[in-house]
Amino acid sequence: MDLEGVIGAGLTLLAGAAKRAPLAGEVLPLLADAERAAVRVLRRHLNDLDPPATVVDEHDDTASPNGVLRALLDRSMYTSPDKSRDALYLDLLGSLVPDEARILAALSDGSGYPVIHVAEPGTGGNPVFTLKNASTVGRSAGVSLPRYTPLYLTRMLGLGLVRMGPEAASMHDEYEMLLTDSAVNVALATARRGVRAARVIRRTVRISDLGQELWEAAK
Image (cartoon, rainbow, N blue to C red; front, side):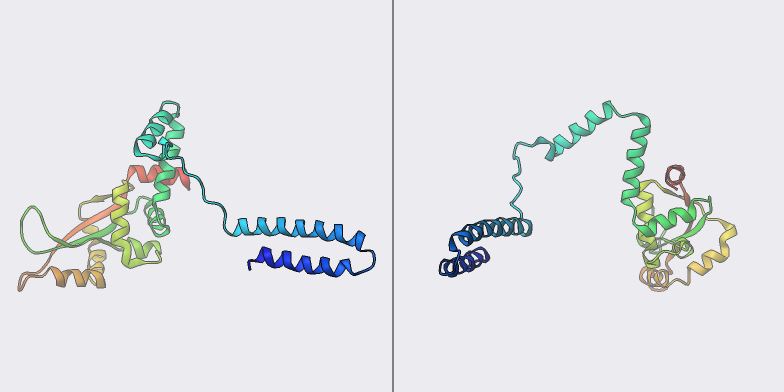
Protein backbone atom coordinates (compact mmCIF):
# COMPACT_ATOMS: atom_id res chain seq x y z
CA MET A 1 0.00 0.00 0.00
CA ASP A 2 1.37 3.45 -0.90
CA LEU A 3 1.65 6.35 1.53
CA GLU A 4 -1.55 7.97 0.29
CA GLY A 5 -3.43 4.72 0.93
CA VAL A 6 -1.98 4.44 4.42
CA ILE A 7 -3.19 7.93 5.31
CA GLY A 8 -6.61 7.21 3.84
CA ALA A 9 -6.90 3.93 5.76
CA GLY A 10 -5.90 5.63 8.99
CA LEU A 11 -8.51 8.32 8.54
CA THR A 12 -11.13 5.66 7.72
CA LEU A 13 -10.38 3.88 10.99
CA LEU A 14 -10.75 7.16 12.83
CA ALA A 15 -14.06 7.75 11.09
CA GLY A 16 -15.30 4.31 12.18
CA ALA A 17 -14.39 5.07 15.74
CA ALA A 18 -16.04 8.47 15.52
CA LYS A 19 -19.34 6.90 14.39
CA ARG A 20 -19.51 5.05 17.65
CA ALA A 21 -18.63 8.13 19.67
CA PRO A 22 -20.95 10.87 20.94
CA LEU A 23 -21.44 13.86 18.64
CA ALA A 24 -20.60 11.71 15.59
CA GLY A 25 -22.57 14.01 13.33
CA GLU A 26 -20.20 16.86 14.14
CA VAL A 27 -16.97 14.87 14.03
CA LEU A 28 -17.45 13.04 10.70
CA PRO A 29 -17.52 16.17 8.47
CA LEU A 30 -14.35 17.38 10.16
CA LEU A 31 -12.63 14.06 9.49
CA ALA A 32 -13.66 14.19 5.83
CA ASP A 33 -12.17 17.66 5.50
CA ALA A 34 -9.00 16.49 7.21
CA GLU A 35 -8.68 13.54 4.82
CA ARG A 36 -9.02 15.73 1.76
CA ALA A 37 -6.47 18.22 3.11
CA ALA A 38 -3.99 15.45 3.95
CA VAL A 39 -4.27 13.95 0.47
CA ARG A 40 -3.71 17.34 -1.17
CA VAL A 41 -0.58 17.98 0.90
CA LEU A 42 0.72 14.48 0.16
CA ARG A 43 0.23 14.90 -3.58
CA ARG A 44 2.08 18.21 -3.58
CA HIS A 45 4.92 16.60 -1.62
CA LEU A 46 5.19 13.68 -4.06
CA ASN A 47 5.19 16.06 -7.02
CA ASP A 48 8.08 17.97 -5.44
CA LEU A 49 10.04 14.74 -5.00
CA ASP A 50 9.33 13.49 -8.51
CA PRO A 51 8.25 16.40 -10.72
CA PRO A 52 6.45 15.55 -13.94
CA ALA A 53 8.66 15.18 -16.97
CA THR A 54 9.06 18.31 -19.05
CA VAL A 55 7.46 18.02 -22.44
CA VAL A 56 9.98 18.77 -25.17
CA ASP A 57 8.67 20.41 -28.28
CA GLU A 58 10.12 18.43 -31.17
CA HIS A 59 9.45 21.39 -33.46
CA ASP A 60 11.49 23.86 -31.35
CA ASP A 61 14.05 25.10 -33.89
CA THR A 62 16.07 26.99 -31.26
CA ALA A 63 17.41 23.65 -29.96
CA SER A 64 19.04 22.84 -33.31
CA PRO A 65 22.43 24.13 -34.54
CA ASN A 66 20.63 26.04 -37.27
CA GLY A 67 18.29 27.61 -34.72
CA VAL A 68 21.16 28.65 -32.46
CA LEU A 69 23.03 30.22 -35.39
CA ARG A 70 19.93 32.09 -36.54
CA ALA A 71 19.34 33.38 -33.00
CA LEU A 72 22.93 34.64 -32.80
CA LEU A 73 22.68 36.33 -36.19
CA ASP A 74 19.40 37.97 -35.18
CA ARG A 75 20.94 39.23 -31.94
CA SER A 76 23.94 40.62 -33.81
CA MET A 77 21.65 42.92 -35.81
CA TYR A 78 20.46 44.72 -32.68
CA THR A 79 23.51 44.47 -30.39
CA SER A 80 25.63 47.54 -29.68
CA PRO A 81 29.44 47.39 -29.66
CA ASP A 82 29.45 47.65 -25.86
CA LYS A 83 27.06 44.73 -25.48
CA SER A 84 29.03 42.68 -27.99
CA ARG A 85 32.21 43.37 -26.05
CA ASP A 86 30.53 42.39 -22.78
CA ALA A 87 29.28 39.16 -24.36
CA LEU A 88 32.83 38.34 -25.49
CA TYR A 89 34.35 39.12 -22.10
CA LEU A 90 31.71 37.07 -20.27
CA ASP A 91 32.32 34.10 -22.55
CA LEU A 92 36.09 34.33 -22.04
CA LEU A 93 35.75 34.58 -18.26
CA GLY A 94 33.34 31.65 -18.28
CA SER A 95 35.97 29.58 -20.08
CA LEU A 96 38.60 30.12 -17.37
CA VAL A 97 39.19 27.97 -14.31
CA PRO A 98 40.26 29.74 -11.08
CA ASP A 99 43.94 28.86 -11.51
CA GLU A 100 43.92 30.41 -14.99
CA ALA A 101 42.41 33.58 -13.54
CA ARG A 102 45.34 33.72 -11.11
CA ILE A 103 47.79 33.41 -14.00
CA LEU A 104 45.99 36.22 -15.84
CA ALA A 105 46.30 38.36 -12.72
CA ALA A 106 50.02 37.59 -12.40
CA LEU A 107 50.61 38.63 -16.02
CA SER A 108 48.38 41.71 -15.86
CA ASP A 109 51.24 44.04 -14.84
CA GLY A 110 53.10 43.24 -18.06
CA SER A 111 55.55 40.82 -16.48
CA GLY A 112 57.09 38.06 -18.57
CA TYR A 113 57.84 34.52 -17.40
CA PRO A 114 60.08 31.79 -18.82
CA VAL A 115 58.54 28.99 -20.86
CA ILE A 116 60.17 25.75 -21.95
CA HIS A 117 59.13 23.27 -24.64
CA VAL A 118 60.79 19.85 -24.71
CA ALA A 119 61.05 17.98 -28.02
CA GLU A 120 62.76 14.91 -29.40
CA PRO A 121 66.23 15.56 -30.90
CA GLY A 122 66.38 16.50 -34.55
CA THR A 123 66.39 19.52 -36.80
CA GLY A 124 63.21 18.81 -38.74
CA GLY A 125 60.52 21.40 -39.24
CA ASN A 126 57.93 19.36 -37.32
CA PRO A 127 59.39 18.64 -33.89
CA VAL A 128 57.82 15.95 -31.74
CA PHE A 129 57.12 17.51 -28.35
CA THR A 130 57.00 15.61 -25.10
CA LEU A 131 56.09 18.77 -23.17
CA LYS A 132 54.94 22.26 -24.14
CA ASN A 133 54.42 25.44 -22.16
CA ALA A 134 56.16 24.48 -18.93
CA SER A 135 56.58 27.72 -16.98
CA THR A 136 57.24 29.21 -13.57
CA VAL A 137 54.23 31.51 -13.90
CA GLY A 138 51.93 28.99 -12.23
CA ARG A 139 53.88 28.82 -8.98
CA SER A 140 54.49 32.57 -9.05
CA ALA A 141 50.74 33.14 -9.40
CA GLY A 142 50.01 30.76 -6.52
CA VAL A 143 47.87 28.31 -8.48
CA SER A 144 46.40 25.35 -6.63
CA LEU A 145 47.67 22.80 -9.17
CA PRO A 146 51.12 23.90 -10.40
CA ARG A 147 51.62 20.68 -12.37
CA TYR A 148 48.81 21.76 -14.70
CA THR A 149 50.50 25.04 -15.61
CA PRO A 150 51.38 23.74 -19.13
CA LEU A 151 47.71 22.90 -19.70
CA TYR A 152 46.57 26.25 -18.33
CA LEU A 153 48.89 28.15 -20.67
CA THR A 154 47.84 26.02 -23.64
CA ARG A 155 44.20 26.81 -22.95
CA MET A 156 44.88 30.51 -22.43
CA LEU A 157 46.85 30.65 -25.67
CA GLY A 158 43.87 29.12 -27.44
CA LEU A 159 41.62 31.82 -25.98
CA GLY A 160 44.04 34.53 -27.09
CA LEU A 161 44.65 35.80 -23.55
CA VAL A 162 48.43 35.27 -23.52
CA ARG A 163 51.16 35.37 -26.14
CA MET A 164 54.51 33.66 -26.57
CA GLY A 165 57.70 35.59 -27.21
CA PRO A 166 61.34 34.72 -27.86
CA GLU A 167 63.83 33.60 -25.25
CA ALA A 168 64.83 36.34 -22.82
CA ALA A 169 68.55 36.30 -21.97
CA SER A 170 67.79 38.20 -18.77
CA MET A 171 65.84 35.17 -17.50
CA HIS A 172 68.80 32.77 -17.58
CA ASP A 173 68.48 31.85 -13.91
CA GLU A 174 64.72 31.34 -14.23
CA TYR A 175 65.23 28.96 -17.17
CA GLU A 176 67.78 26.98 -15.18
CA MET A 177 65.35 26.74 -12.27
CA LEU A 178 62.59 25.58 -14.60
CA LEU A 179 64.85 22.80 -15.90
CA THR A 180 64.85 21.30 -12.39
CA ASP A 181 61.06 20.89 -12.43
CA SER A 182 60.04 17.23 -12.14
CA ALA A 183 57.67 17.36 -15.13
CA VAL A 184 60.39 18.90 -17.28
CA ASN A 185 62.86 16.21 -16.19
CA VAL A 186 60.41 13.47 -17.12
CA ALA A 187 59.86 15.10 -20.52
CA LEU A 188 63.63 15.38 -21.06
CA ALA A 189 64.11 11.70 -20.30
CA THR A 190 61.19 10.71 -22.54
CA ALA A 191 62.43 12.76 -25.48
CA ARG A 192 66.03 11.53 -25.27
CA ARG A 193 67.11 9.17 -28.04
CA GLY A 194 70.16 7.18 -26.95
CA VAL A 195 73.09 9.57 -26.69
CA ARG A 196 71.09 12.32 -28.34
CA ALA A 197 69.70 14.67 -25.74
CA ALA A 198 66.25 16.19 -25.97
CA ARG A 199 65.77 19.59 -27.54
CA VAL A 200 64.97 22.41 -25.13
CA ILE A 201 63.20 25.37 -26.68
CA ARG A 202 63.09 28.50 -24.54
CA ARG A 203 60.32 31.06 -24.84
CA THR A 204 58.58 33.71 -22.72
CA VAL A 205 54.92 34.25 -21.94
CA ARG A 206 53.16 37.59 -21.47
CA ILE A 207 49.60 38.82 -21.39
CA SER A 208 48.12 39.60 -24.81
CA ASP A 209 46.28 42.77 -25.80
CA LEU A 210 42.97 40.93 -25.49
CA GLY A 211 43.98 39.55 -22.11
CA GLN A 212 44.88 43.05 -20.92
CA GLU A 213 41.55 44.43 -22.16
CA LEU A 214 39.70 41.65 -20.35
CA TRP A 215 41.62 42.26 -17.15
CA GLU A 216 41.00 46.01 -17.20
CA ALA A 217 37.28 45.51 -17.87
CA ALA A 218 36.76 42.86 -15.20
CA LYS A 219 39.11 43.71 -12.34
